[in-house]
Image (cartoon, rainbow, N blue to C red; front, side):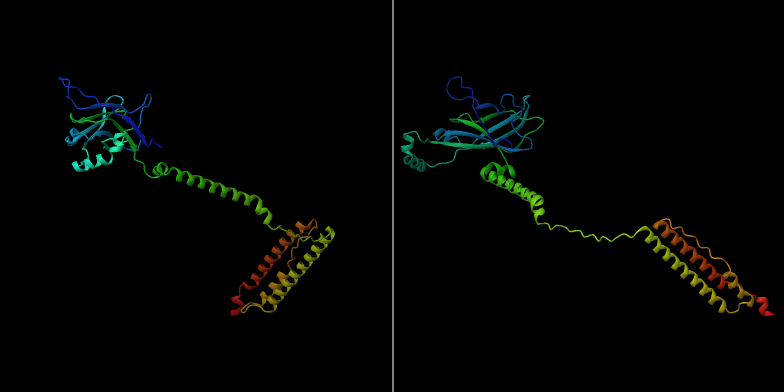
Length: 321
């Protein structure tokens, strides 16, 4: 965070008249804002307020002074002017009666030196000054354009115009510290509780998983082969019985319009040998694979015979004769 305020005393200089009495030039001061070895005093992107504070006595000369101008010029390291500003100023008005009452009431403090008859004049020279990052200001030239002015001391003050989080951090430091520490503690506590729940509480409250495995006794190899062999024999017998039944129905119920000579087609087909593989009982997997192959071969042959019976050509010449 940039410096919130900077204060530098201002020592005005003027030229005395040739008679040796009075001021013959405007009071002028050259103020070096940057310290030795410091390149810039203004933070980049931060706005500042620049105020000239003058302590002026409530003398008849100052009260009759009226308005006057205060001018400031900021310059960089090469002496080039980067910014200028001028503002009017005047003492606050007090009537003669109010001045007498004020003097009477504060007379004890005035006698013992606890109070003075003066006014502090604050002249705001820059309201929102934004420094150039490539040509930062390092000094200022201040000039009061009045040769009759009287003052005790003068100083230039620079205030950062904070906003947002910077404003809260600077003007409420205790509240910001308490809020930041509390948020950090809450966040760390949340992480700790989450870790504790994940590593400890979850393990204690979780119900143990019970795995039940049904163990069935494995049959001997010879017994499994015997069962597979019986299954294959039953499937072979069922397929042979089905083929014979379908062939018998095709012979007894010929399609209409068929030539009697074509009825012997079923007998001819029935005389074709059915190719059945001999299954070697090597192991369980090979037996199952050969069983599937046998079933697909038998079914394809059965479909072929059935289609031959239905798609036989009709002897038209014999029918006409």
